Amino acid sequence: MTKKPEHVVSECRKAFKKAFGHKEEVAGCAPGRVNIIGEHTDYTGGFAMPAAIPMYTAVAVRRNGTGFTNIVSSALGKKTIPARGFSPDKGFHDFVAGAIRQCGLEGTGLDVMIHSNLPLRAGLSSSASLTVATVAALLELAAKPWDPMSAARAAKAVENDYVGVPCGFMDQFAVACGKPGKALLLDCWDNTFEEVLTTIPGYQWAAVYTGIDRELAGGDYGDRVAAVHHALAVIEELIGLNPAFLRWYGMLDTAHLCCSAHLEREYSCLLQHVAAENKRVFAMKRALEKQDRYGVACVLESGHRSLSSLFGVSTELLDDFVVFAREQAGMGGMRLTGAGFGGSFVALLQRGNRNLRRKLLRVLREHVSRSAAIYVFDDFAGGVTTWRQ
Image 1: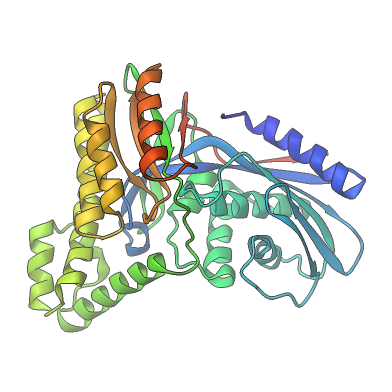
Image 2: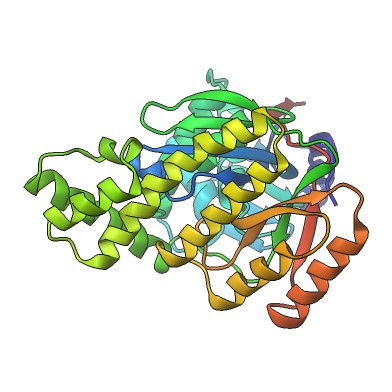
């Protein structure tokens, strides 16, 4: 169930007072995101089309005058770390600790409360939501100037340099800079963007959580990122092309280029996906501008096939579910969103079609995970905000 950001912040404030016995000084709140199209393109300087969703992480903060920082999450428990000299240890608090260091507040003892209605590890950018909300709150606490884009850049530095997630900029950008009712076509080469209306008459967007958790800090996601960068380095060394070629080359040209560089098939497939995915971003833009539901469905399904057959981040079970969903009345298209390997689908569903949602959820829970869920959005959301007492 979606809520307004002020409702999530109000709940966070109440939890803060219950945990620490006094009121917070500031609070930050950031949404989650779905990526409509443009997957595994951001860390190669390509194009993506994310949108912020109306599910939020709120972070309330107050100085406590001690040598320790107390971090409490309503979902993940408690952690106390030294105000100075802390180091990452692979917990949820790493995102907060990294933000403290990034915002220049190391050495300041803090009380921090985290409260969210955004599902964890569902591929909906719960980590970026937490990091951006924390960065914004801490910059506000320190009375430092900031804007959504600077908060997004700082949050990316936290995830890359402190937590160890080899992500691009898309997630932090989407949750910081989201625009109500719109997706953002992001050029990840220079971080410029344009707004794209996402309204399809009679339909609404949804996140369909598979029940299979995502974890970005290690494993297959990091392996894919490393493999893509290795392939690009080989091409740059042997042929002299920098990674910008993926922004403009098609699949066939990319395949020929990989062959000329004597890259193995697995590397060629990864780069072919990225090249084609960049083109799909602009195909989606045209379909949305024309409110072409069929065009939207085609781009979504093409993107999913590419994630499965070329990038190798889907599974047979998830592919079968996409085929099942396509055949249902009222379905407007679906694909994996986020890094893959589980997480969520982004889907376009006929507005008010409860029978469709029941069918999708029943099949997911019977064949994939009992934890599956569907989150339907009346509209996309705005980005990060802060409150001060």
